[in-house]
Image (cartoon, rainbow, N blue to C red; front, side, top):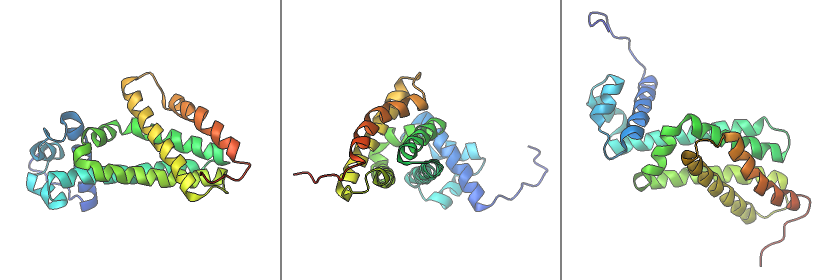
Length: 203
């Protein structure tokens, strides 16, 4: 860059996006503990005080990264389900969108789980968000099921998706479509059996 040329002014929202992009990359490469605010600032091309002015601390920066991932994840899964016709397709498309998002944003996903001691509460927030989302989809298939049963099914599905995502991290040959198919093979078999009759309360 020519130092004689004036720098273009960057809006606060754009600067925060640049910082979060850099932070996710640095945290993903080095891990939260080994990453430094100096390196993040250097990636963005700003001074370290700018990072503190926006996010307060390194932990604040990490939590902001997670909050953005949470919002993005809900957006893509909701949009995918909204474009579907029927409960099965809604669940399938929502699940596929989940895996595809994690594939596109792998550094952010790795960050969530490698830094779970720092981001545990934020990670639980993402789980709760996805559980509520899945429970709403399941209600379309089993409208007579009580809310607690729907929540329990949703917990099972979200947990299975997490395990499949972690497995895909070690088995690089498993595609998003295959992972979605594996989940639906089991989940929809059970849901299709209860969809036409009222669910009975557990005793």
